[in-house]
Amino acid sequence: MDSTLAIVAAVVAVLVVVVLFVVAKKRPTELPGKPQRPGAQRAELERKPSEALPSAAQPSDLDRREAAAQEAVRRPLETAPAQAAPEIADEAARAETEQSAQEQNVAAIRQGLASTRSGFVARLAKLFGGRKEIDKGLLEEIEEVLITADLGVRTTERIIEDLRAKMQRGELTDEESVWHSIRAQAQAILDLGAGPIRLQHQPSVILMVGVNGVGKTTTIGKLASRYAAQGKKVLLAAGDTYRAAAVLQLEMWGKRVNCPVVKGKENADPGAVIFEAIQRARVEGYDLVIADTAGRLHTKVPLMDELKKIERTIAKATDGRTADEVFLVLDSTTGQNAVQQMKMFREAITVTGVVLTKLDGTAKGGVILGIVEQHKVPVRFIGLGERVEDLREFDANTFVEAMFAKPSEATLAA
Image (cartoon, rainbow, N blue to C red):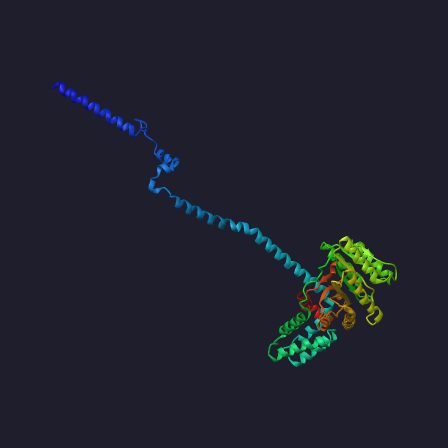
């Protein structure tokens, strides 16, 4: 009996040892008296996520590709605004700069046309003062103001006919509608759609013509300065060989704007001087030749015929083509006489553009409308003062806005 109990006790002891061994095998880190930290398993899972997750939770290749595609779409959308922002800012800055330049240009032209606005434009404004209705009597008064302002009969009739037609349709209801109509007609007259100045050849040639005293040589100097500032290599030709003072004046401008001058002897053939200048320009790589000519009265036939000869000489020097541009310089203070000058010069030579000078010193700025309306030749530049920057490229919209700006109360009271 005792032996049996001893055997049973031995078997139980063996079983206990086996059980303890198995338990220790399954939990090797849990030692008696030293329990495992609660976060140990979580840290282990974080170190080996692919082993810790059940196989069913593992992302498939398809899932990974889809996630990558979504990331590829999301990333450009997030970064695009940051990349586009500098471009948008630059565009806004350019627009602001252009607007500022335009406003400054309008202000400068408005100041230059102060005499014109205090003349016939102020007289127009006074006609509207206190008017409660627009009638035929007002149109007759407007017609008188326009004719006496050197717009000319033809131009005045066009503006009055437009006003009369709108009045019959009931479109002239107040002062502002009359102003709007006059401005619209003025812009339609001046905006011929001629496009930009064409200087396409190497070298290009600008021929300057006009009567004595209109500011032709000064205009040449200002044009040379403008084109040189644009990076063009400019050569001047002293084609007015009859006046030593004209050659000297052109040389002074040449030194001022750093453009050389080709000249001949006193009373030399103007055509020969211009021919030499063009040949030199071709050899030395000049971009532009600006040629002066003798100031001449438009009634002197021999001098006008000389212009035709110069035109033929330019064709010989340029292998058959004429000057790229022929600018007729007109003095705005001469009023309707400038319109007559235009007629005579066009009979002698092909005039491609007008430069209207001395607008800052006359109340007859409206003559520009008569010149363009009658001859359909675009105005290219206007002179508003003595400084180089006072020669401004002509824009019909800007000019009309400046000329027909309503005069101040002080001007109307004067």
